Image (cartoon, rainbow, N blue to C red):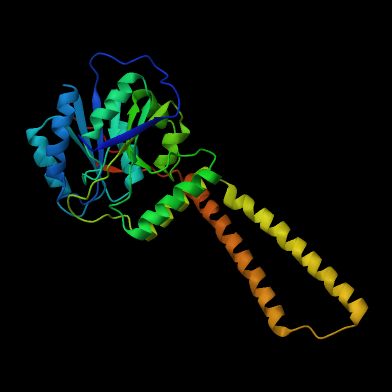
Length: 337
């Protein structure tokens, strides 16, 4: 573990006295086309969990993979009964996979982690140590973005900065889904019904005392990330529209500013006409002005459309996910959700 954990920062004092005694650990793992990483992930995470407690489960959620991810997981399940498996009927997205895992896990401490080994399983031990101190949430924060491409690192940093400026609930910078949640936090998250889910924001919204641990983000064991820049952009829009109405409010200020400038310009034309007489206005300046106002109107309609589209999604009340197979360790198979 040397060189993995760099530092920790605490946003409050632990709300609970130190947690002692045996506990149940749930490790929840969203998977999408992780055929090449599955075996290495299990080889890395199972010894870590076994050192921490005898009572643990590894709950894998196959988010509609098109490769042999499901087969790899089921092969390991045959040898390790503490591995559980939820297979979606199609790809619903990582946020839905995390939601399904939180709906089904039974741990006193629940750790969410990716299967590509960029999130180091060794850090789980440090998370559990902080949880035992009394913290409700232990979030792993990336010490750097050396493994990201230049554009991705640039836009990721800017996203956290600007999101926290306009959002009603700020999120810890450089913090993803790698975190430990106390059972009480999991039960609170289960009460949130929205369909357009931004889990980083939901983790912060429910509150509870939180501490962070910085760690070195590793290279992917196999494959490539499915989160391309365009997908990340849309994901950022989901986060902003879910936790801030600032994009709607700003257009009121844009409207007032435009109206004020139009009033000033109109007053100047009247004064100039009274003093210097009438001249023929330029066609080019008039065309630019009309196009400028038209562009502002279209942008404002687009922003409102983003919010209206999310309202439509919520009012449909479709399930967040559908599972074609649910196999939980030590429990009977459940009906698809």
